[in-house]
Amino acid sequence: MNALQQKQQVGEYVAQLVPNHCVVGLGTGSTVRFFVEALGRRVQTEGLQITGVTTSNKTAKLATELGIPLADVDAVDYIELTIDGADRVDQQLRGIKGGGAALLYEKIVAANSRKNIWIVDESKVCDTLGGFPLPVEVIAYGAEHLMQLFAEEGLYPSLRTTSEGTPLITDNGNQIIDLHLDVIEEPENLAAWLANQVGVVEHGIFLDLCDEVIVGGNEIRVLKKLQLV
Image (cartoon, one colour):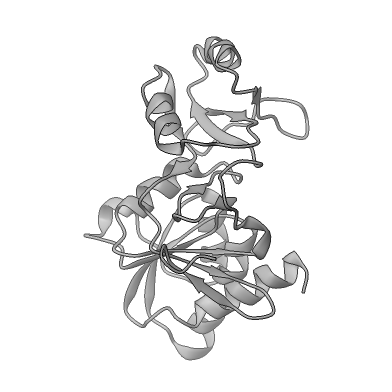
């Protein structure tokens, strides 16, 4: 089973777990797209009654097209369950997220959710974080100085650009600097350091937010901190 098949498998599987009358956070990314599409089919064919809180304009557009009712994150008291993807997840359920440039909204929705489940294909599970560009969302004003600082710190930064070569702009009107690190030995320390830099809006290290990871494959696995192998 290849990665695309695993994404579809786990996305459709988790869509069946969403209960009726639930406020559900809808993540962003290729795996989550399968989940949202399957959830939309349940809304249309089963009459599933849910309210979605989205993490990006892209997901909001897809959910609207599928007939999933949406609410702003500030219009709900809490989110019962959020389903999102991850670019990397380690043995302690720490993750790198933001490959889809939605890290700020993803972190806000996750922080206001009672339960967070990440859905991934097998290639995303790792022993040590790294090996995938770590996104740092920054304001455009002073971004070049941050690039220089990150380079001096040995973080190998690059400004994320569109296919046309222009800076990618997030849903919030900011830019993204990707840090190319093979290994992140101490993600807590790096997360704290990044958060303290003036001009940084948010970073893609997610700590103490994920409750479980569901992994696609020949057999679907549900991973928790004490069960990861």
